Image (cartoon, rainbow, N blue to C red):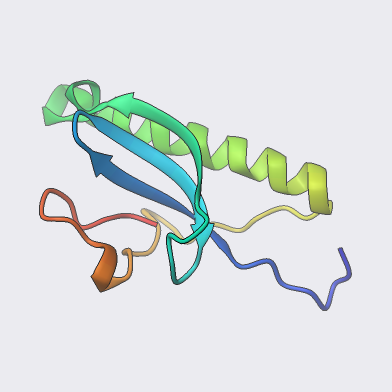
Length: 99
């Protein structure tokens, strides 16, 4: 990918029923989003689930990063420490949404 091009994608994490689902999506929309992975909410809630939640997020970032690198040769840069909040229109009532 030429240095002048910028690929604008995000890792979107959404609660869907009993699942926490990771998608690769456009920065401003979920239109055309592709599911990357999912884990049961029961596994990532509460104090005991905090480490698993972080591990799942790290795994999804790593998987997406590998795919981006394989296709473009570029390494993605992630907002730290916990990403960027999802656009207001995408936020659910259970979570604030992490992108």
